[in-house]
Image 1 (cartoon, helix red, strand yellow):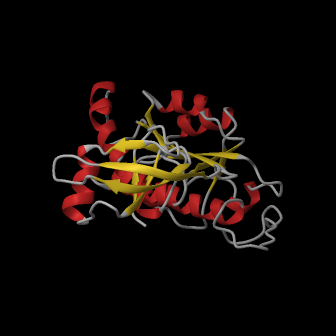
Image 2 (cartoon, helix red, strand yellow):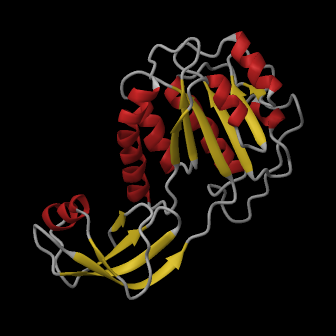
Length: 259
């Protein structure tokens, strides 16, 4: 069944929802759906409504809610602090990060950032960023929309990090990733990823002072647009919803393993 996301839209059984023009256009012109067919509406906060289309035309239409169900939040909350990157790199991080289950993206500039945004430009881009995450969530069936925010500096972002476990991927990291992963699953993780130019020693020192563990992934130096996605994938397998039923993972002892 086709799903559409209407952020923060109240959804209750028996309610009839007028469809926004962009959703209506997709329903009527792209998918050629008609009155009487069923769709799903999602509020981006975990509630999904099974709806029946009514009075669909090129100019207006509505959906009558038949039933609703609530999808609980994932057990692992993932916050990605990502250095602003050039071109479409950031689009990829937002899209694929949403597909992998990231809950929050904090975008910021570092000392070595090639691309920078001030508060005015970030507000102009915020709508585009949110559209990317919304479309990614719709396509992958994600019921919870991630937050996209902008921090004026990496130091502000570091100090506002909410994760119970805090990881910084740094080419000068002193620990392989498995050595930094606790056996007891954390409820939340903050991941710090630098821009194309990397994280400076002073930024790394500041992050470590705020509780971030400096880690590396083997001998590879990853691009800014793939580094965070790699760690999110690993964390989702170890602690999150990518693990299969019955998986019994135990992180290796410190210093063991090539990762």
